[in-house]
Length: 451
Image (cartoon, one colour):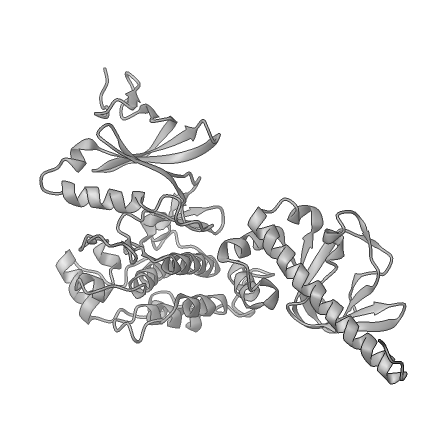
């Protein structure tokens, strides 16, 4: 007996298995991931791309509902319209969308993880450093969406997927406000507990409504409770508009003061007192945990990304490429007098200086002093083979560098390599110009005229 089936020909059922579809369009269903009142989500295989995807199928009866059908259709169309438009490492990609008389479904990136909901209980809280990392990545992803003219409007733990330690993906843009769209947006969407004061008042919204909602998520992840609580939605909305929540430190005393201050500023009722830009919020998150407050050694990913973004070498890289650089690079700290490159050695890595100074020496003669943001050893990549080093590079102080192996960069995306090539070209031009200036000065000092 078929216990449940979809009312369209493109979805085929498997007899005897409840709520199981074998195929949706060209996508071969592997298993059901979840089902709600209006839709079901399946893990499936895209046979043409040979990749696993998630397929959200909207029930025909939901779209045809006399009372709410128009609203459901609008939410579906909003999310479907973003297919191929938001490309970011921390946003679930939408690959395809179908809406016709036979089927209505959206095909998305499949993420093998869970939502943040399970980490909002007081007995299952994540370490503070991990929470800061997660929220930082959410902020950068939502900053990207803002630049693309999209406001999410429904940021909550259930819409943030976590895979591994801190790899996050924001999903469900059905409630999104697309600033460039000419169509009327659905009002009153979102989850009341996470809405900003201006959202519950149904006032015109900016990206600052997402900043407020992310502040609510951060508060809940840190403390295991919502900042605004009520026995019903009306009571909660009253608190969002009129009541200041207790600072997170009062609920969880081990929260660092700087983290506490970030949450409270994000939750400011007056948008003018809230963070004015995503970059400002992200920077505070990246620097919120000083060395004395970080329990894990090394560099935090938020600190890494924030650092790369400020370096001249990476000024033409987009967020997407910078996240890719983080996966390609190895980060090191070295004491003074460390020899990073030895003259005449064979090397296959190049380096970008993050902090401190290094000197370039050839046969004990000083050639140059490099500062943060400068690259050295790049011929190991540009030479397309094992390259014999022509000079030594030695740390003049305690330094931090990133190391990228030539063979690793060769496997990067085309856009990422394109930006590296551009940065290398600018670097070589600058060095040639500097060499010409030195040669001209040397000849002038010797009173030699050059025609």
